[in-house]
View 1: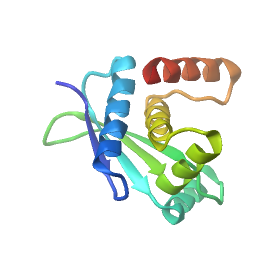
View 2 (view 1 turned 45 degrees about the horizontal axis):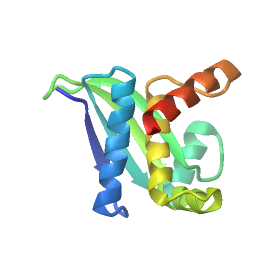
View 3 (view 1 turned 30 degrees about the vertical axis):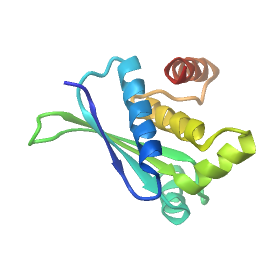
Length: 140
């Protein structure tokens, strides 16, 4: 059984929603995760600002946050990996400023969020190199 990725929230056309879930699954596959569930949650600026303030101590919206869970779903018996929250307005602005398509930016954020969910980080140079390498591998 493949990991299941659920998309929650409004604002994405169906094709972009499929791209986000496929990108998340590709990151899971790359990292050897063969079972489990996660949610990609779309948030507006206000909600993302609240989450970023509460959990990261930053009083501004950000592009993506990850919340690892690890609990067992009693109905499916699968591990709930957690939530990846993407701020759609910030993602779309970043795409424009970076010269990326909205699709490329959303795929990057989905992969980046899943890698964080699985324990990757980019605070230290060695960790950053490992995470960036995984991102590039998945996105290519």
